[in-house]
Length: 112
Length: 112
Figure 1 (cartoon, rainbow over the protein chains, first blue to last red):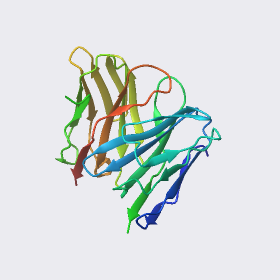
Figure 2 (figure 1 turned 45 degrees about the vertical axis):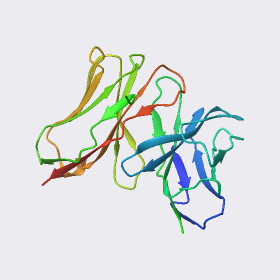
Figure 3 (figure 1 turned 180 degrees about the vertical axis):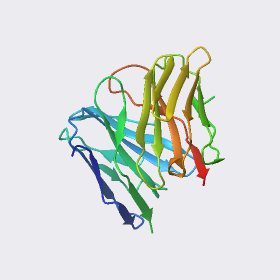
């Protein structure tokens, strides 16, 4: 089955720690995206990548970092610089036109 | 003014009702319009997409775009309790792998 997988489903982090969220897709999509979702805030774009070894900041990139070494993988690191990281994180990917994005199941990150 | 406005609800309707969900937008450059459904603690799933103005129907769902009014709608006929979810509108300026702009979502409850 083709799709997008995210792991882990739940993640707990102590203050001051960096954590990395995994996102893998086998849809052969070129573009991948990371969103953060908070109650009442909708989806906010963190980073996106249109091709391997290239990525762009979204609206709320501060305190996050990404890499895109392989087409299939787009991991997100939540650094200790992110002051309020507790949220639901969603990864998505898209092929070309139109820009329909397909989402993974999400990772819920909680800071203890 | 936000680029995309969507009433967050919550919207509560009896089973069998016709539901109308709406978004307005300010950027006349938007060409592609999508609706996503998101169940609690899950990733959004694509329901409908349309290009430019007009209607598109898929089963009980109809998507409508009025570019002259910068207004899009999703109609759900014969609503079911399983339709209870948050519905997100999304739109894009052009083809290619550009990020979508999302509404904040409308929470719908269909009461049996």
